[in-house]
Image (tube, rainbow, N blue to C red; front, side, top):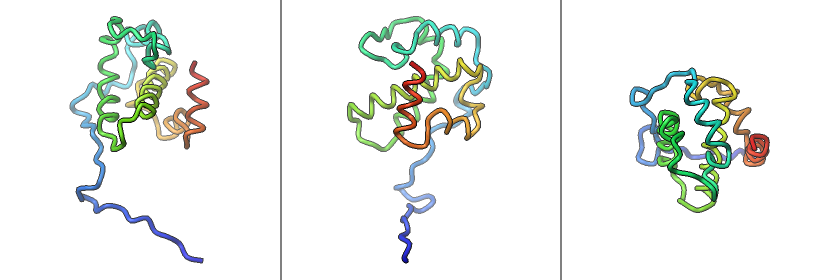
Length: 135
């Protein structure tokens, strides 16, 4: 029985994806602020997911800017085609993450790897189930 090996890019090679987040550029406070929790709640899941009735002018978007900025930076740095499916998936992920922040009282900066896996799942099927649970 032979084992195939996955060829990985060189550690510092041009094909290597690099993490786009420099924590010093963001407010990484772990505790979610009361105004942020209220803003997420008032925006609601449908608005957070930016569905058809999304209100981009809602005041809550300004209140949660410190939470949105790093999520949008990661999204912009992903090396995948900007298809409508990918856009929808990333907006869903952001909505789920923001909702979870208010549920736990902590921002994603303080989550453990296990909490990330529990929320996002290990595959697309698990993620879709978690999205449905948040609606």
